[in-house]
Image 1: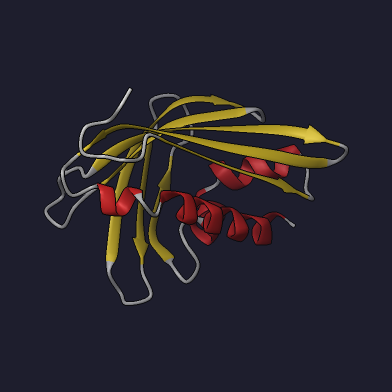
Image 2: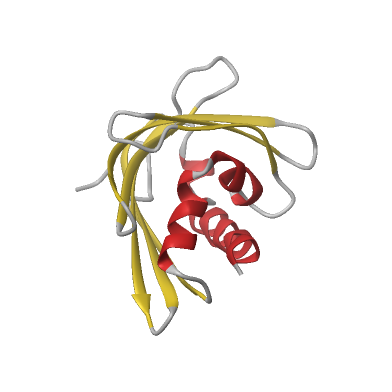
Length: 153
């Protein structure tokens, strides 16, 4: 089903980490760890609030290398330790209005002492200006997972 205002409907990014499933899962649910890896290369997260439980909120303010802040909110739908996390994310524009909403499903599978992570993103809604941001979603998640690898190994 096509999403109005977006040429992107789904993005899947996968990685295998040389770390236990429990360690990788914790890196997705501990705000101090999420703060270290969330976002593209050279971004920081001056605000990183994680309440990883069904109905709990996520709030991250990514700061780009030029100092621009990119705020994002979301809600956890499902948290099954250490197997699966499902949450929404809603990046906000400079007036605090939603740009788009994405449902993210993260699965963690242990294989021979390593952990395979699959991040499946489905765009639920998008505003007219959202496509330029959505075009970078695959690269953003890929770089985030690169950074996650540095945290868990």
